Length: 231
Image (cartoon, rainbow, N blue to C red; front, top):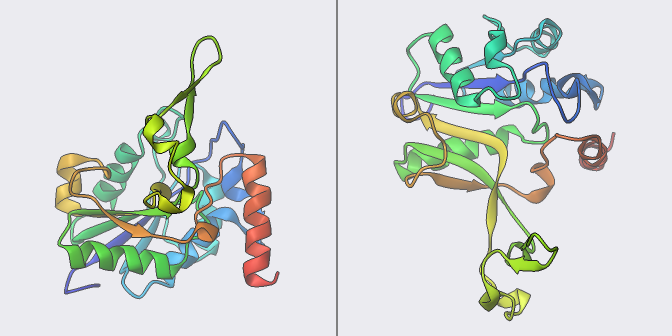
């Protein structure tokens, strides 16, 4: 709870994954990947309740083993590659019921995010009086990004004026890292978005901002996890 407002955390972990099958059950530090999001939410000093939204019974068991609640299974149509995470989150809110002022979406594919990040994003949202907050991380070389033309030539994304600047003269740039999404429940039910003109950002360090989509991501996440925990 924060400022007398109740907070629900929803860990999202579907069974299917086109890029890396079974990714949410892969071992990381002696636990399945999905467990780390549940443990982070349970360690929060603000989150009042943590539930797991999944369509997969094996993921549900792993979630319960980590101390998470699994009061429902997500319908199959909300767990396809084409399904919207917004529909899945609205489904979770409908299943859990009313009584929460804020909802926090934690995607299981961001296992390095911590309770500090969760609480920081919630506090940022509340302190700003904003309806929504998302976590972001610094990004490098965004000003040197290019499209490829049909004939294979480089075409600047932001325009040639940025190419001439020294790196140290460029303003910082950030990108959503997929780790923490916070929204006022009533506002979210109406808008069903996280990126909005009223969105505020919570900045996370790069070392906790890896998103698990590929086998290479898993190698990087495992290496960072081992370096951070000594295990």
